[in-house]
Length: 248
Ligand SMILES: Nc1ncnc2c1ncn2[C@@H]1O[C@H](COP(=O)(O)OP(=O)(O)OP(=O)(O)O)[C@@H](O)[C@H]1O
Ligand SMILES: [Mg+2]
Image 1 (spheres, protein in one colour):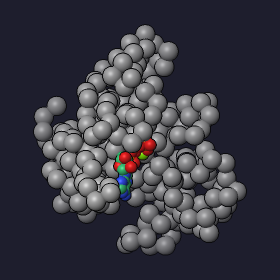
Image 2 (cartoon, rainbow, N blue to C red):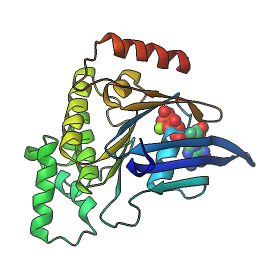
Image 3 (cartoon, rainbow, N blue to C red):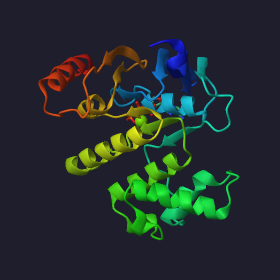
Image 4 (cartoon, rainbow, N blue to C red):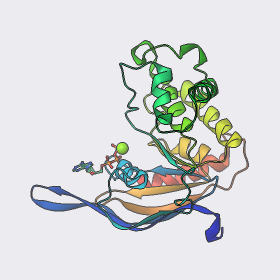
């Protein structure tokens, strides 16, 4: 993959947090790039810095060493979208208003915004719940609403922090396939953090395996398998064994 085919570069990124008056290194010399339209999985033990890394990429925290650059940074039409680990829907807003937050600063007319919100709600199968409040939705529906909000920004890079965590396995598989369908229809690079190695291998073109204390990259595994993939294939099982042996 040549450099111009990359959407995002993370170079020599290190990050510390203060703990008991000392600086504790949380991320150590992280290096990777994300290709245009690539899906990159990130797996690693709890606390190895996965959410921290996404927060740095999306720009929520600018205190780090190293550099994070996007090839499209100069183009205001190109954005980074994020689905947070805790979803962050506003309980006092309806589903459509939550999704509409993504378009708050958009110059579009009210009618166009409304159409766009409808489009993304449809995409995640929530058209009938536009007027519902988050408390009226199931856990999986809340997660889909959060995904719709991130997509409505029409990002060219979508960061997802355990978007399907805490879902039963059937719903999880369905949402994974919905995500792949959305990815195929839209030009978007996806970075997805998950604690589920199988999920990372099913979705990802490559999978970063991290290790903790301090959080660093152990290996980057290429998943060179055609899509649609067979979750039960021997190839996936082999890659899973390899990733798990690094994680254990
Ligand atoms: N705001 C903060 N201040 C101080 N330390 C923090 C802060 N946020 C995270 N940390 C520490 O940084 C480390 C990495 O946290 P992070 O949330 O990035 O891990 P993670 O890999 O996403 O874990 P999980 O899989 O459990 O979500 C943890 O040890 C955590 O205690
Ligand atoms: Mg996390």
